[in-house]
Image 1 (cartoon, rainbow, N blue to C red):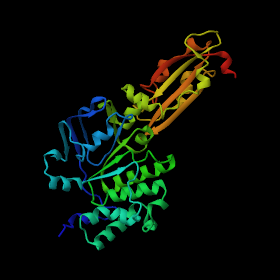
Image 2: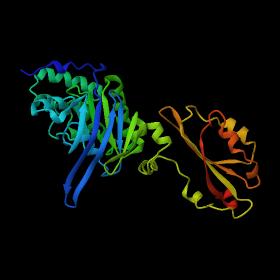
Image 3: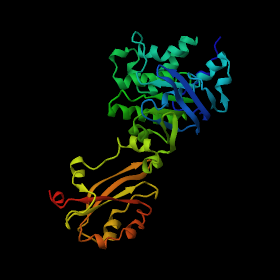
Image 4: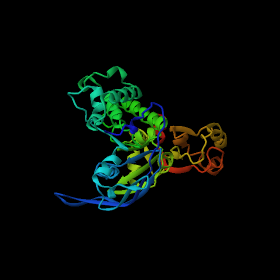
Length: 372
């Protein structure tokens, strides 16, 4: 008789979560073009109960790394520990049991078209030999959790992409896992549906205490959902840290390149009017102020205006957003040539709310463009 002790699922009840430790993990595979180092000396830890993002461009090694967690990929070197258990040392039966602690959802849902929503969710339990009454109880609870109670007997062809992914999430939770792996789980969805799925994952993490590992190539997903993030490039971790720190002060070229998709750059027509040198006495000096969240408080715009003491200084571009409760973004100020010598940058960057912000000289704005 199959042990039913792991079926005590209660919606809203927290369960034990698992920490994940990568110890100098490397992995190489052969391709038609030769050997490829998919992972190179990966060494970091994912804390139990956090939402951890792994981001990188295609081919960076994200999926390979995550597949080592449930040992769908066995590293060529190093160890992957799940709550101090090295899965590579487990026999076949013990590994199968350990994998029940790890749920996984995918980009393309992987639902059976000939089975209803309830049958898709309950499939892993039927394979495990769980009695029908137990399966129905569990499936009903999961349908309520993911907001699909009214879709129980519907077939996948009649579901939207977001609904299909909710079915995938429910199915991944049938064995009450401690870890939930999400491999590009939102990349096939539109932005509004993506946000609803990320909200569901945040809710599951908060209510059930799961450790969530989220693989993506989209920085917006990282910003919306994750506590910490690791940036991968060519098989290596090139940057790791709290999301607000990585967004506010990226250290790696790969991170800066990925962030270009979520930063609000100057409009192209505006950039064309900027030169590296002043061509006319009326050209304005452009200063970029980078707000990185290090100060822990919102920038004081009123204090900035007062400290500048120059009514002709203009804000020509600016976006300030909240990332993990910290203000981040950039402001671009145009200082008229006649006022440049009186500008005291040091005075206002020492103000509360502005202390420690970075200021960069962008160039000079053509006088004609200022009045266009």
